[in-house]
Length: 312
Image (cartoon, rainbow, N blue to C red; front, side, top):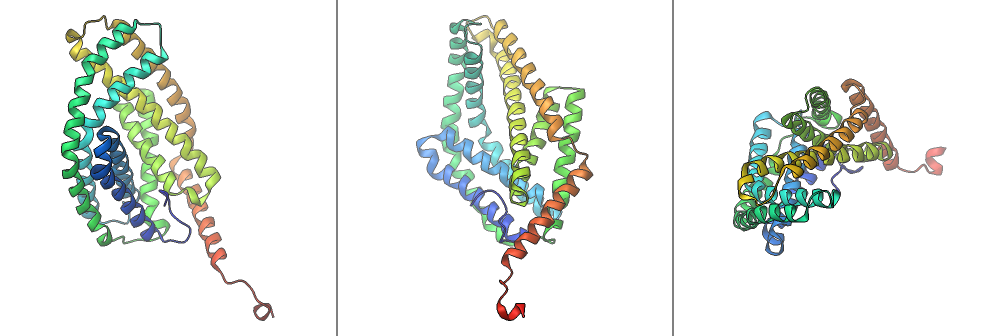
């Protein structure tokens, strides 16, 4: 089923279902997908883990703190163990995108020389990722086995209210902080909070599909813009550290990276004004109204149809 609540399930059962599905997906990638394409399998597994951790944040008001921390720590550590495999691939992708976007502005030989330097890192990371996959899958199976034991002490809107409010508040604060001081760290933190909002909006899309679907799409695009910016920042640092080993003048490439980051940030800040246009309390109240209308519609749809006898 999709990564969203279903009309005919409670928050408790919906969250558990989504949690199982994400872990099943990650485990499958790390046990089966890794055999054909280790890099892509690790990428898909890490995406599933991010969704899983976002579920925990959404339900932070319902899960016991110790229980939530235990699962979050396990998932975080699993993701970190796999990160090197994905990071090496991302550097190649960021470089290739730069080369295609600004074709002709820097000699092809420069990009080729950089790629030669980065490719061994990707090969090593792919090999290491294949070796780690089985171990991480076993760790995730242990987390999955505990899902039925999760104790959600609140149900309905109250189970997700504080987590949703917190994710929006943190994202809005991150936007303001990054706008005032657009450091790599500030932009990256804003991106993480925006990704949380995107995941949370996806889970809640059925409450008002047209509105929530559009807002979710905007949050997704914003996260991608900030992600591309961060990838280029990391590429710039990595090239700076290995410049002596690359037989090419990197200054023009550094200039392109800086120019592209300016473009991405300009678009991100414009979109951020729309994604985070509401004050947190107004945002929470609006989504609560959608929630109540959605549940009322679900109850009405499930009510028995009137008969001649009931109509009198």
